[in-house]
Structures are given as structure tokens and as C-alpha cells.
Length: 166
Length: 228
Ligand code: SF4
Image (cartoon, rainbow over all chains, first blue to last red; front, top):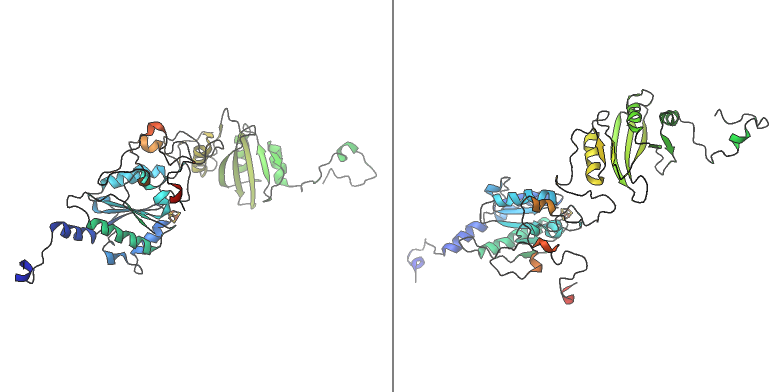
């Protein structure tokens, strides 16, 4: 009883869903590899774990071409303004994954040099546990992010509740 | 060797024999040469490196001799470290490790630096590697190196006001975000601490009241049953 009955080759959808579907399956990460966690992030894109199965394998080293910033490692206060500037250069809509306990909370560092969680300077969408998180965990974080993008309104306003991945 | 009496019965010099050092260090030409330069040999430490203390004013000439004298020829400066001993006078010490590739010898030289005038001569003209080492010692402990061409901070942000490896500096820092905020950065509150309506971005922290709740010691932010 609709267009799809009459034209079997046609699929109808809401534009919001369509845009969300396209967005979530072509996430281009901006790798902010700051320390040891970056090694696991590299492993995640490698053939064994293969992040490209989820459409997020195109790591862009230019913030202007990326959607999701993966903060992989220990952010220091000296680096903080650089990280924020990179984030500001990313086009909307954009997301942030805090990979590892260092990025999520400062981790084992509580001292004068380390930012106690990148959420002091960036709006984080997905927090990831582990020191370092296994590549599976990062993939899980990307999948959780995809769920969030599904709920995204077409104007790019995002649901702001962060997700915690264990 | 010369001052050990060959014949005990002669005892021509009883005053020197009586208060002899309990363990006489082996006669080392290196120690003799350095002592002649004005360095004071300190007792051996666990790692068996010869350790010397040099007065701050004598350090430039001693360093020059260590580097240039063919009998010493310490070609390599392994590291420069600033150390803080809050109870000692002078308070700071700059520790140099030197390696003579010619003689395969490693020594450690300590130069005391008083707190009132934390300054010591740079050795960058003798060992160019001292450049970054001295910048680090300056950054972390606050010892200035006179004659260094570019004595900037190396690890902390340029406008950072403290020297964080001084012993009276709190480990967790004082106002860590100071450089970030000065550069125009806006701090955000932690998601768990605030009940923020969905759809809004995070609110900037009001820093006029110090650290936001939950960042200082002993302030539980979660109810007791929420823990563990
Ligand atoms: S969470 Fe662990 S592995 Fe990751 S950056 Fe921190 S210390 Fe390194």
C-alpha cells in the first residue's frame, strides 16, 4: 500500500534516517594519537581487526576531512590548546571518542602535566575503558557512536549523553 | 703509596699515620688531577662512580679542563640534572655525568646552587648536548644557566609560572590549566558532575572559585552506594 508496492525497485525512507545511515557508515576518524594507546588504534585499522568493516578506516590526518576525533593517549596541558584547535577545525557534525583511561579521566596520571580527562576541553561522546583498550573495545566504541549518530537530527544537533564502553 | 711508611719502625711521621682515613681510596690519577683543579672527591656511592663536588665559581674552569685536558678528555656529557634538596644549603644541585671515551671512565660532578641566586655557568660551549638538558633542568627545577643562548622551557608551556620538580610544588599541580586558559581555551565541566539538560553543550567552568567540585581531594561526588 505505498510506493514500494507499486515500484518494487524503490525504497522509501525518512531523509533523517538516510542521512544518518550515510553518516554513520562513513566515519572518517581524525587520529589524535598521543601515546601508547595509539598503537592499539593502529592495530584496529590493521587487517586483523579491520575497522573498515564498520566504515571507519579512512584515517585523515587533516581535521578538515574528518568526522570523529579519536583521542588515543595522554593529553597534556601543553597539548591541550593544540587538540582543541584541531577539534575546532573539524567540520560539523563531529564526534569525539576518548580512547583509554588517560583520555577518559587522566588515568594513572594525576599530576601537573596531564589533563584529567579530555572532557575538560572537548565534548566527549564515547568513553573507552582500558589501558590500553583492546582493538575490540575501540570497535565497540565506534559501534556505539554509530548508534548515537542514528539518533542524530538532520541539522546535526546531537544527543549529548556520553556512552561508556567497557 | 708514597705516604705509607715502608718501614714501621722508622715512624718518622706519627701525626700523619694516626688520623688516617679508615678506607684509603685507591690512588687514582683522575682523582688527583681533579682534586688539583679544586674538586672535592665525595665518597663512592652504590653505583661505584667517582663523585666530585665542585664549587659554583670553579665550575667553568673545571669543566673546561675536563673537556680539553688530554689527560681527562671527557668528550661526552651524558646528562645534566637539577636536584632539589629543600633542607640543604645550598638548596639545589646540578649533577653532571661525564664520560671519557678515551679512558672509558664515567664520573659524576655535583655543583651546588643556592636558592637566592639559582644560577650556574652553562657548559653548552664545551658540550653542545647541554642545550636541551639545561633547558630541562631550568624548566623543572628553576636553575638558570648563565650563557645559555636560548634558555626557554622545554617541557612545560612557555608561560607556565612554576618549576614543578621542586619539592615544595604539589604533585598534582597548582592550577594546571593556567596556560590553556590564558591561551583562550574554555574549560568544561565533567559530565558526571552536572545535571545538564540534553541537547545543550557543556557549560564553561567558573574558575573564579578555584577548582570545580569533584576535582579536589576528599570531596565525594557520587553517593556512597554508587561507589564500588
Ligand atoms: S590509557 Fe594506558 S595505554 Fe592508553 S595512553 Fe594511557 S597509559 Fe597509555
